[in-house]
Image (tube, rainbow, N blue to C red; front, top):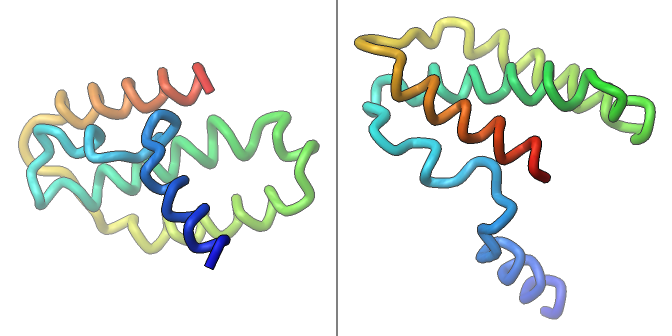
Length: 99
């Protein structure tokens, strides 16, 4: 029960959440798959395949899993303008750099 309470409290702590509702602001429903594909690509490239991979033992496995997920999301295409997607991704990258 204590673990459940701690997990619930952590989930409500949105100060350090990289993927929150703000990521989807002004993103049409049909572009969310593409957005998530880009998020996964960024996390793999900008986080997991950096010096972090030498610090944590399972990073390589996580990177491989996310790479396979990216492959499954390869059919996700955007429609319309990319400006909102790129703006939201840029905000997420800025937050990642702060953390």
